[in-house]
Image (tube, rainbow, N blue to C red; front, side, top):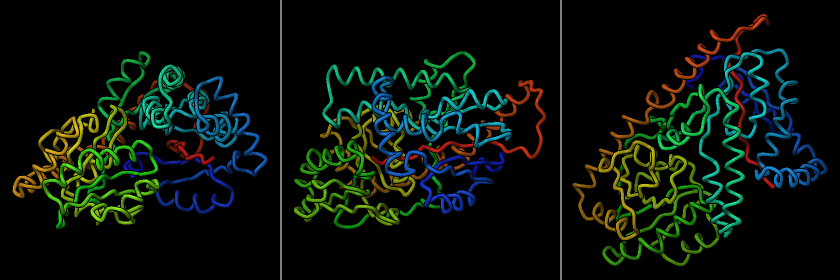
Length: 408
């Protein structure tokens, strides 16, 4: 919504034929135009089988993944995108992830400024995915090195990149070419949708919050149960451990059936109503990549957070303002008990958590600022671009490519 104040927005994506109309309708509620291409990958079973086979060689040659192949080589290959755009002219193109990087030169030839919204440094999350699958040692290092080379080479095709944490911004700055801009745009939270509403229940509840379909998140939830909660239960036997998030794996679901002090929610429609009842949010994350938006959401509600330093790496959050930073499981336990056993301290931390989010992750501090910086980029690019082609018709702002989940 922040971008609509400055741009006329065209959203470019793809979908299965049966879903195109509905997706286009929903997109037009939040942007000016929507181009929903019919999925070439999912056209039919034969097409899907053909592309799955073709992707094997691509993955072997590049070190990338199926999603890279499907998005960059099939759905958003440069020829297909060129046909879709026709003679349309754009001031700025915002790409989600680097998968369709080969389309950037096509747009730049038309005088369009191309910006990559990175979301994460993906080779770092790829390394964690391999760890979760048990792929370690030389095989893991080789796979990560190839993926990293492909990703960082793709960065060079863009005029600017957007990092979602200060840590990733600093890393990317060491890798980009002269003249490439690196912007910092943390993932903000709509404060009206996440109002301060902390109402800790009794007996006290400690939570892990995240999409349980992620092996890394499921692993962290297990760490909370196995390494933190036993020590909490020795002091407060009635305390409850809540695993909040969709698609929990079978072993976590079994915990909820076998232990009355463990609650596994699965997907929750209005998760705010559940989270606001938690006394503490636990986040024992390992790895300095990405952005833990779940931490920001909980803090916006006023839920104090006990986390590792990795969990909030590069997020500009201050220790002691609704956030207690620890490293070991024993330290995480002590931080949680400190909140559980001192109501006045917990209340002060709750208020501080909300205040910190309002200051650093409200609309104007995140998306509002990013929209203004993108406008400045587009204007600077427009003034420096010499083009003999007439700019007929309405300025259409920018296409946005969407990263779609590829299901096998």
